[in-house]
Length: 211
Image 1: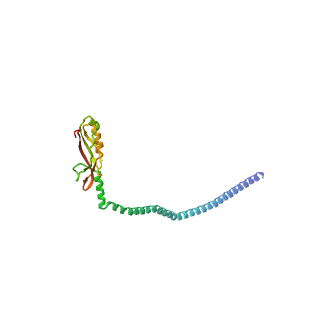
Image 2: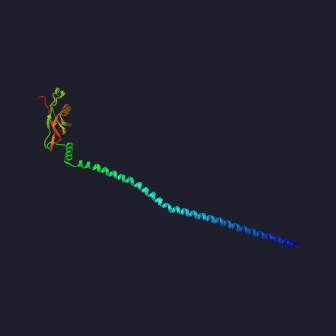
Image 3: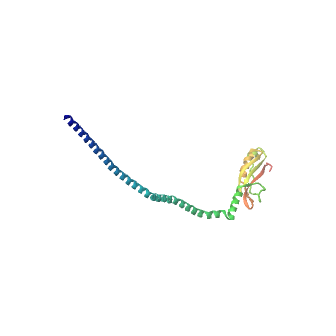
């Protein structure tokens, strides 16, 4: 009798444990399902919101892109308009400068004035206007020295003397005297096609005490 009571008590405890385990498992499953449904609904709602945002955003982005394109294109158009205005302003001046006989004549005068012609290469050679005699050097006169100096110089289109060079001299006493004296001379400039030009001259100067 005592053994039978023991087994009945043990079986009752086991059945109670099984029932409690089943109830716990069922409760946890139901709770997990309830939580899962909530999270799924939240996820679905979040996906719907993000999808709505994705659908709505492209038009705004397009507007921003269009505005940026307009902002980039505006300076270019302004630059072209300014360039066209500058071209229209300067074009008439260039036409005036490049056309007409006056510009050609001025250019021809500049070219002729810069060139140095030799004797016989022009229509009219330079002619002396003021050529006083060169003073006899005192030391040469005291020593009774005679001599000859060959000098070369350029008569400018203004009639002045430049680039005086003694190419041959019998004494250094005459060389410096000739350079100083020739630099004081003045000529009527040579002309070529009616335009005053530069001309190179060569002259021989004699120093003689008998004169």
